[in-house]
Image (cartoon, rainbow, N blue to C red):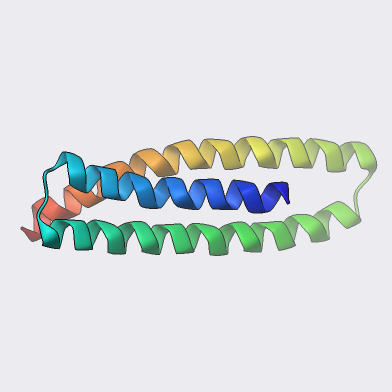
Length: 103
């Protein structure tokens, strides 16, 4: 359940930051459409990648000791939170850069 929440939070952050970037750029209809496409594709890619990471972690955790499982879980949650922050910043900057190139 926690993993689903982390996946949802990071994916929604990607999408909303792309739309906020279009709003801050005072983009027209085309700018918003581009931001929605970019944000949606990054959010879907994030959800897919997080699901694949969960499968890999489940395979590794089954064959590890309890202390290693605990360390692996903590490190993974920390990395996911950091990925959410970095991804949100990149998602905020990407639509602006792409709109400047397209328009």
